[in-house]
Amino acid sequence: MAPPRTRWATVRVETDGSVYVGRVFIPETLKRFSEVLCDDRAFLMLTDVSVDDSDAVEPFIAINKTVIKTVRVLHDGGRGVPGQG
Image (cartoon, rainbow, N blue to C red; front, side, top):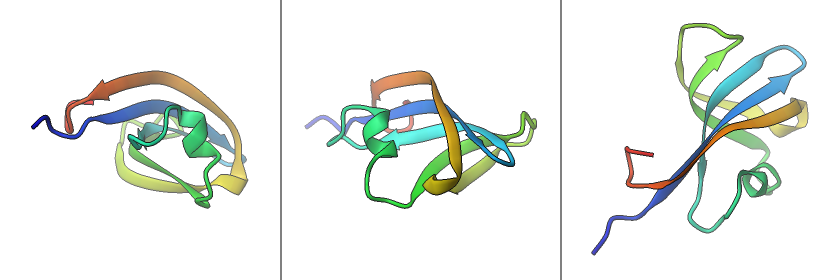
């Protein structure tokens, strides 16, 4: 049996105070990043995040969706095997 497939998008999220660039998991049940952004969850979860163009990478950041000003999809990674997406 094939392993479950995952999908990740790399996004740039701008808030009033900072700019975040990181990866967002898109569940198998959803087709697009916009569906993740518009779902009922209050927070957008990012992994492998740089903040304000810093060289440091945070492993995880959750951003309250109410403070997001703009979102840009930098790369829609498509589907892949876990850990390779």
